[in-house]
Image (cartoon, rainbow, N blue to C red):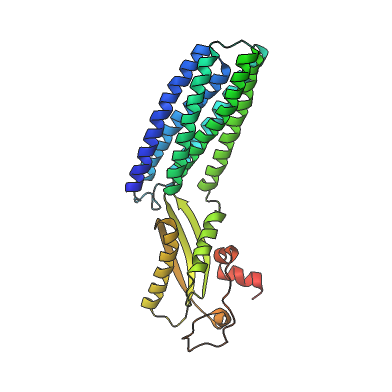
Length: 332
């Protein structure tokens, strides 16, 4: 698909630029012997390796479903983001270790002006790449691109602090500042890795996405039809670029098969439109009963047993509960 090709192309560009930044940072480290700059260089190694993993995962995730993967290959994106989080944590741990060592055995870096210039340019490039990666990732629903972009931007934010520290080191000539910088920013890197890992684990374990459910609810309420007596037992999860949505739609009991199909198809279109039609939807139709008459807006119904009072307002809880669970909650 075209959007999968675009995501892969973006990731290739990010990997290429990250490799160039990596080379520049290590040249700056060997020129200055600054452990603070080594902190930035180590993070760049993670950027490049994680970028390659993300690229491979995007290529796999873009494959269509097959007999072994009936829901497609979208989970590979979350897997790559998890690996990226683990690598970031490992890199941060190594930097913290080096920072502690330099605190007890400080040495003054050399040619810091060159190092400061390289780090500043790298920070600007990282922020720009991060913004672009997040922009494309959100546009095409790519967890890998969004995670990678956030990592690049967090790298850029930490670079600002690192630059301030290097400038302070340059003017004060206090060697212990170099080790302190590595200790502080190594900790920031670890925290970033833990945050990415928590988000991707939530996706891998299919944790409920409240924002996704709220989007679906708003679409239903905005486009609600008279014959949609009730919608319940809804489940929604994301696999790669696609959302898989299941629900039960309660319809008038006297509908024939074509009428029921049309009602279900309209609901499908309403929800799919919220996600650029990247939705695989399964709808089970239920028939109404006498107890639903008070909240059924069907004006043409000739079988009504009770007068219509008002539409039942839907909540996220109403959507995800089964009919039996709702009856138990309401004491019916």
